[in-house]
Image (cartoon, rainbow, N blue to C red):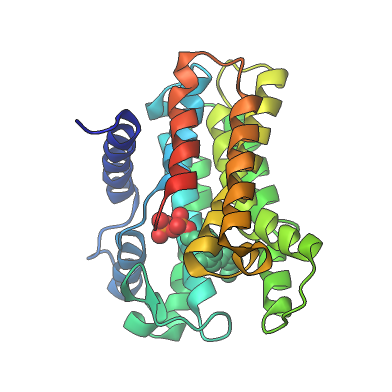
Length: 275
Ligand code: GRG
């Protein structure tokens, strides 16, 4: 029998993919070139972990999947924009993403840049779509903090500037990981809790949970790609660190009930993932 968390992830991924399909303009919508590219970038095999984390976080705080779905999908769409731009020749210059041609290889550089821009814009359109305006604004505030120049983009800038050096300090590595990847993961968890009945204390705990698993996610990524933390500490050292961050994360939500079991399960899934 399939393990409970894998079933949860599979079911929620299906729901997220269905919602993304509804939210994205159809591939025949004019101008077709950009809408085809947007759909290509979104439906090319992402795990949807950030959206699933948002849903699990909402459920851990007494919320429901329907209310959080637009913002959960917005985060996946914003994540897809960051990957497209990260793959561009001016950045990582990657020909492949998720085992398929990267967006600029498939559609050309100009359309890829515009596809990233259009996805980022669509993300904010969706963040404004929820029923409650105050919740929408709080979520937008959280996401903008996570992805701007003091968040994901800041992490990307420092990462670019450190490329090719082999004496990157641990504090710099930590800055890159917490900002480039960790910030959006932590925001995925927090935006899931926004709009629920969670009080300030619960909100703080769940955000710290998100920060710990965000860093653990990037460390595991470094192990998979044999870079960053894995180069610095070796595979075992890096995995020990990811494992203790996962424990810290779960400790943060120790006072949550059974309704937070999916969040705990996803934390373990992130630690043990191989892709
Ligand atoms: C260019 C604005 C801009 C930002 C780039 C997020 C980022 C900043 C770059 C991505 C580079 C990268 C591959 C980082 C490693 C961690 C990471 C985000 C991996 C991909 O996330 P997954 O594994 O991807 O959740 P899927 O494909 O499952 O969606």
